[in-house]
Length: 408
Ligand code: PMP
Image (cartoon, rainbow, N blue to C red):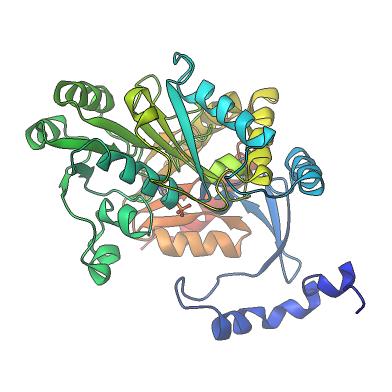
């Protein structure tokens, strides 16, 4: 039998793509509604659709492609790992997996000694949270306190700590013993906690809820309360971690017991991690949790490449500077539709005075700029950390036009 050639296996040409939206609707489950565009290529901060139109990607595939599209360092790391050793399962170790774990432990818990912080690798954010959730049960307590407005993923455990009723209700009953308290409210958190609390789970910034930032001292209070009650403090940094806010973790300098990562870690190659610090590092025993793909060497090398480039190219600093520029320029428009811009680094929510974020986001897409509207009055901007000053300014100009056209 003849072997298929690379040409036999390639994806359709761009010229076949116009019908792709229709084919998508026939063959894909209707989980996401119809696709807004068909994209066929990406490079740096740009992607191209099947009609040859170029877009400035200010969403990074939902805060994922931190180094932009087709980054040469990620490409070369992945291809060389794949051509050397692609997969072995967790019966075995690989250098990439162990090296990424060491790197993450160092970034997330620099003060930890050997064995005081440990990693469980996953393929996604929800799986990282699922692992963390299971770890909390190993404390011997079951009670979890989560936040109103939270989003932690779509698997049953992650859904149980996600507050949105629309996401939860069709799937009841979810794992129980979860209490929701208002986000950022230290007093409500203190009231809800006691010595039966297993863990408190917090996003340092609520991305899906519209880039909501809690009061400055909220994470510190949560740390103190967890210490007082012997509960684990669990930060979900799936969206905020890996440099997105200009720090490796948005929660820095507050140290959690559990931290979950995904999204930006692999620049689009699926990889997530649940990291336990202190006593949470040693809760898991053989046989209690597992994964076939998690920690796969190709995924791990992608993570190492991402961290290496962020360090080498000073992208934490760029995230801070470009984020500040975005706030300055958007607020400087003095547009009556802009209330203010919130967030940190390059995770920003442009808060509008009217519920027109979806139509503004659609108009920006038509103009060649990708953002989204996590709430009717918030436009989320989460561009690659490599974005330039000129690209931010060009977006702000396009935004000014879209806002003008959206005025009631
Ligand atoms: N946690 C947070 C804070 C998220 O923003 C998301 C994704 N938007 C998830 C978890 C779930 O990640 P994934 O889609 O990779 O499962």
